[in-house]
Amino acid sequence: SAERSAAGCTIKLDKEPIEEYLRSNVVMLKWMIAEGYGDARTLKRRIAAMEEWLANPVLMEADKDAQYHKVYEIDLATIKEPILCCPNDPDDAKTLSEIGQEKIDEVFIGSCMTNIGHFRAAGELLKSFNGQLPTRLWVAPPTKMDEAQLTAEGFYSIYGKVGARTEMPGCSLCMGNQARVADKATVVSTSTRNFPNRLGQGANVYLASAELAAIAAILGKLPTKGEYMELYNSLAAKTEQTYSYLNFDQYEDYTKKAKDVEIGADIKAGAKEAYAAQYA
Image (cartoon, rainbow, N blue to C red; front, side, top):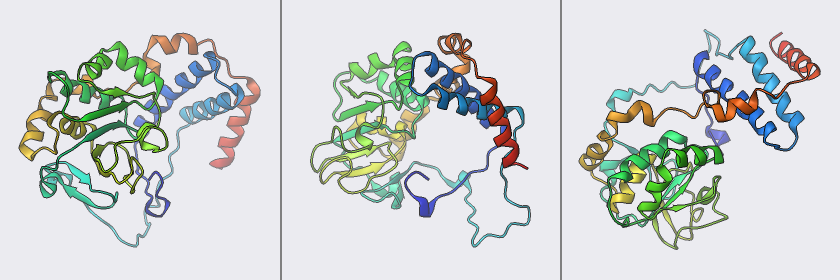
């Protein structure tokens, strides 16, 4: 729901993925404190709140008798090919086949909506390509922790081999106020928005997955459904390895530093009191 309050939504999750996410984030925040990030007390308050929830997990849920203005039911089994958002409106969604084989000038793989698995998948697809890409490829992981892990796993070498431009971790092209694509370029981007002139002056931007973006970078055009499926299916043998999350509580580089960070009794007490008041 980023940047779209009027069309916002919430997704009901089970406790298990939330617990996994918070355990990882507790270690990450403690690591940040150990690394000297500013305002340690604020970070400790966040840690204490997360740990309080983990000790007593409660999820907000709709009432069983809740009534809705309208209900949409989508059978995901009927979706047989990628869906893209067309230039330059994030609400103009079409299937790959409906769009056709549009020539692509530049590709951006990045934004806060990506995770490390998307960059691994792109790297695996690019690995088999020899020479320089027919497109200009930009790669910008959302965090420096993603960058470090991707470098350790050899993916930055793959990006460099094909001539990709690796940006400093963060917003990069998605923000639109740093580097920009060429004027009037046709672009495939993994960002969440393609409003006019955001990525570049007069640019026509398709929003798509990292896998489709990487394939477009290799082919220099939007692929046919058959081309996409052939390349995408090449990832099947490494699915679990490719799409595993960067769970900081499972990496010694982070846990080793995090274990020495202590949360004061006063901060823990404040978190407990706030949590109790919230669910009283």
